[in-house]
Image (cartoon, rainbow, N blue to C red):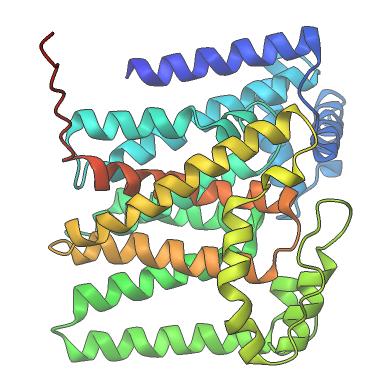
Length: 367
């Protein structure tokens, strides 16, 4: 689609302009990814294959993804930024494919364009970070699960599996989102088959039990899931001027429930106007206000999608599980802005679905 080419061109021009004017802040992690990639290229050029990193970690994955671009373009961070920009186009394409389940071609195209040019997505598409690649992987899994409601094909199974591997490497806790979607999809597809429902229940129970008793593998804190562990994990992320709600502590499970609405609001819509301290934060704050509008109108989508419970169930389970969990443990609006990128495409898509049949009539008054 021409909109994909236009989005890619805008990204390339933004990167080139920033190389000259240096107006966009460079996240520290970008320099680390750049350094690791150059180290891999050096090992390759010297034939030191045994020294190549093989651990399935974030740094290894990002380095190997960036390496071909550095080899072709040159050993400069601009190569890594172009690599991320190229991958960001798939956010628009996959969102378009997800939207086509219920939207017309024109409405799905509009949604894809809105997502591609969303300020925070556009900014993260021109710096070297994992958020864009992670979002592509998550959307791929969503699309694969949606396809599986009809007929499970090898293509969907392979794409879904590849997306799942990327998710595990880049941000393992997002497995919870995948598990929630699979559970909902499995229930809706097998609700007339008690044996399948029993099998799904057993699998979900085993996974939930593993998560509860192996919390440290996902959070790095404690051993068994508890309010103390969640509180320690959340406050471990609260640092610097970007920290918020630091006076809130989870002493009981009731605290987690009672604070959840406030934490969700902060997670989705920060930075608030009084937190803005620069041009980039102003852009993010404006997009947060627009996201608030999209979230409010997205509620209308629920009524419109009642006749497609499978589609609605998958998207709703993804959003509710992800947003609630992340909002509970996130207390830094800089990190919140990055993490909510993986939910913005679906929120915007639901907003477009809600307004897709809206008709505006303009009556000119005769003078």
